[in-house]
Image 1 (cartoon, rainbow, N blue to C red):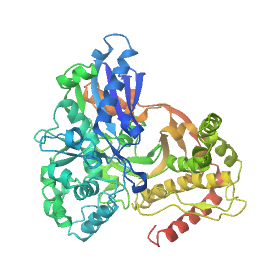
Image 2 (cartoon, helix red, strand yellow; image 1 turned 135 degrees about the vertical axis):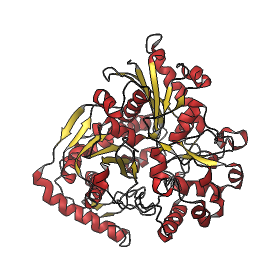
Image 3 (cartoon, helix red, strand yellow; image 1 turned 45 degrees about the vertical axis):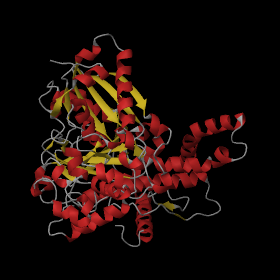
Image 4 (cartoon, rainbow, N blue to C red; image 1 turned 30 degrees about the horizontal axis):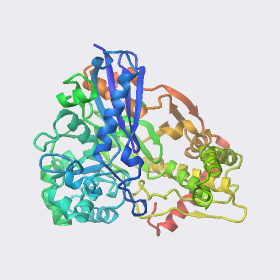
Length: 552
C-alpha cells in the first residue's frame, strides 16, 4: 500500500513540513513556518554565545506548517498520510520535570532562558565541555573514544551541566534533559513521561555518550565525579536506543486533532537534520554528504569491517545505525560556513544600519538593495581573482572549531592584509577559509582510514553560489554533486516516515524510490591543485599559530 509520507525538518530558524508521494517520490507540497520568538531575538545574547529557543516556538510553528499544507491540497489528503518522522538541529537539549514537561512550558519558567532548549550553536558551556574531556581522558575507560576524543560545548552533557550551574531554580525542578529530536516524537505520541520516554540512536550516540560496549552510558560515578549536580541523571536515561526506521508509537488523539492527521499514524524516532539529509542524498561508503548552510554538518557511512577497531579522532562521533541501520554513521562539521559570509556582509553594511541617517526612507531602500545583492556582487568580483593573488590567508573559526578537534575557544584570523586588500579579496579569503576547513575534515577521515572519494552537497549555499561550489571542488580536489531537492533534510525524514509507515521494508528500499536526484555537478580544475595545496599548507600553519600549536 502506498500513501503520503510527512517529513518534518526543524532547522535553526524555522520548521519545514514536506509531503512526499511514496509511490514515485514526488514532493507534493511543502510549508515553512518561522519561530516567532526566535525571530524577535528573544532569550539570546550573542555576545555571551547564548542561543535559546522556547518550546512554544516549536509547537506553534509545527501546527502552523502542517495545517498550511492542508489549505493548499484537496480535501481528504491528510487521510492518506501513512507515517511521520522528525529531524532537528542538535545537540539541542531541554530540561524537563519529573512528569516529562519541558520547564519553559510551566508558568514559573516561561521567560527563563535556562528552562528552554539550548540551541546547537550555544557555546556557553565551554568550561563544562573541557571538564568532561579531562575526566574522560583520565578515566580507565575513555568514554569519548567513539565521539572523537573531545567533548564539545555544543553537546548534551556540557549544556546540561551549565544549565544546572547557572540556575538553582531550574536545577531544583529538572528531572532529566531531553534532545529536541527525541522530544518531538515523544510529544506527538504522548510518551514524554520518563516512564514511557524512549530515545533515538542518533543523538544518544553522537552527543550523549551512549555506546553498547559500556551498557548504555558511562556510569553515574563518572558524571558525579565531574560535578555532584550531575548525580543521578544518567540513571534516568533509558539504556536502549532505537534507529530511525523504528516507530516510537502512534499519533495521539490530541495531536491528531491539532494537525488534522489520522489518529494512530506511526511516528518514527527522530534524528539530527544532517543525518536524515544524508539519507535523502543516498549516502554510501566513500561519499561524504555535506549540509552547507549557516554552519556545515558532514556525514558519511562505513561498513563495520572497514571501521573495525578504529576510533576516528577529533570528529563528532561514529555510531552504529545513526544514519543507516546496519552501518556505522560518522559525523563531522564546521561551526560556521555561511555565517562567516553573513558576518562580513554585516560589517560592510554597518554604516547604513547604524549611521545617523539610517532610519530615513532613502537609507532603508539602499540598505535593502545592498543587502539582497552584496554577497552575489562580492562573489562575482572574487571569482575574477586568481588563487593566491591577494596574499591573504584566513581561518574559518569565527564561531569556534567543531571539527577536526573541537575547540570553541579559538577565533578567526586573517594574515597578509595590505593597503591593496579590498573587499572582494577579503571575501575570497573567507570563502577559501571555509573550503580549507572542510578539507581538514576530509583529510582527517582519510588519515583515519575512512574513504572520501566524492562529496554530495545539500543546503542553501550549494544551490546559491557557483563560485563557492567550484572553489570547494578545486580545494577538495574531488567531484561535488548538488542535489535537486531544496528540502533534503525534510525529504530524509519523509523516507524514514515511509519506512515506519510500512510502505517499504527497509530504508534502502525507500531510498530507491524517494531519494533526491542530482541537480548539478562540479569537477575540480587540475591546474589549480598545486596552488591550493600550497594555500592549504598556509591555512594549517596559521591555525597552528593561532591555536598555540595545538591545531593539527
